[in-house]
Length: 231
Image (tube, rainbow, N blue to C red; front, side, top):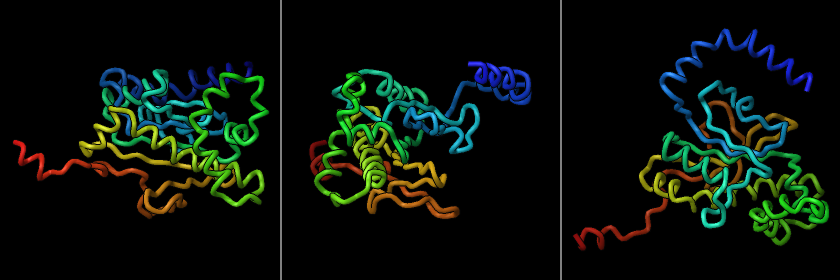
């Protein structure tokens, strides 16, 4: 704790004075974050650092495995953060961010390692579909690191699917007011791979359009002729 408290002191004495007006403005006007970021709780994955964002820029929720429980199965911190970010803060983007060397993904591939952690075991059930994909649709000779990285990326895809089950998200997408992003952060290189809804993960390149997982108003299934005819 000594190093943590030392950091608190440096922030209060050296950093905060230079940002005090910003904090005062954020108190006076309220927060208006650009995006909600749902990332892993891993201590090496800091969304504000990765994106070089400042106070008030991001609304962040972190948990083991960057998991989004389906709306019907959980009423907890992640679900509440999503609802608040979309309905109250009116964020325009949501990012689900996984990463390499993820302990949660490694544990999913080695279930016996979780015998003493029943809560983690129960939580990771929301990633079982991703694990099944790895076990049944990927080459059996992948080395452990490759398998964990592939699982982390598949997991991001499934968590985005869960995200779409939340009423606030579904409604904002239908209104054309929300875009969903899937990211994979490579701890070794510092690169971000972004999920393209059409072609999988692609490395984010400077000056190139950012790949998008789910664009606004992408799924509208009702027959518009029928709707107008019924009026």
